[in-house]
Image 1: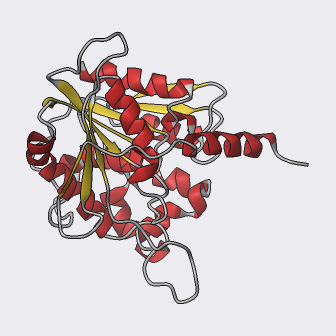
Image 2: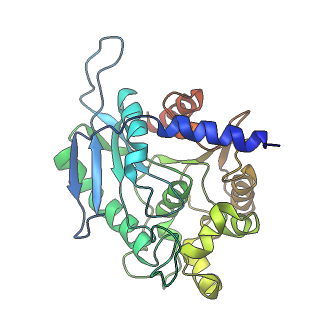
Length: 298
């Protein structure tokens, strides 16, 4: 007998991944590695005939995929285009991820790379103001919102918390002051590593990202959003109640950790929704995502 939840998840994933990739309006490198790339999408003309805005909030988009190599920014390019058609300027960030598949004598982690994944996100966000000014002049950097899906939701939360990293964090990670952000909209994020590991999220990807169980205790204080609170940055989590990839319990634990730290994090739970409709332009959930971003950005 098939599991209805698994069938629904497969159908939602198929819909989300069925959209053809959308080419960016411009791209720029933020480093020397082939994955050190940011794609820029200019705000589009409105459906009602109004022209493209001369100035628009900037949405910084971090893709998911369990920090694993087969999943790159291409699969969220339809979401980037969807947001651009909603009047946002969009910057879609690529970063180094893990090895493609587990195999005998494989080198490197299956999910993510330590410290390279974090090095890249920090470097991309630091370089973004200059790159956006040159490649996407419509972007209003004073109205920047970070968003990301799944593992990308984790990275968005982490990037917004760099100013509260421990003082001995690896070079280039910690900021001396809060980043200039209107806020974060994290989509089904892997936001609490302890809970994610207990639930086996993405086959233990959180531990793999940290370099394995042997490094868990020493590295989790520098990487787990639930350990980096409060941030002082307006934050909302959007989560499907029926998500079996990153269950709602992960988001709920993060929100509870924020409350314990004296910070309010918004939580929008969507009934009848799993993991992938949040990035699917054909799904109603995607419009909810755009509205949550709008509430912070405009």
